[in-house]
Length: 168
Image (cartoon, rainbow, N blue to C red; front, side, top):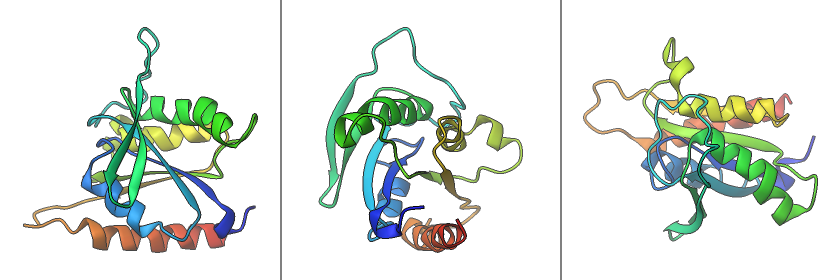
């Protein structure tokens, strides 16, 4: 396994590249390794393992905020993982390369029970596993809270990710 300072991480989601959850998670993941963001251009919740094959997958570079830049794809979360692993990664890091880890999230809503079947967040992580790349999906159940604290949830998510990586 790579040391965490050398990890190349693909960060994706299903809520879209400008979603609050992915921005909070991107911030919380700083220092874990090199983070490459490849996410849907718009919200793709409940897409499960939908993939696009009849139309071209358009991509564009996006400066989401002062510290987060990424590639927006006009497709599903599964499309994002496929394109990142099969095209973006080899182009950026050389033929045969792939991410060390895929992190999908942070989803705006819980992915538990039956929701796991329909979740684009979980599907992106599973798609990564299909391609042989370890993955973690991160979701936030917000319940009846008047204000969802994505930043705090991202810090907790990072602690869980660090714990998992420690025992890899």
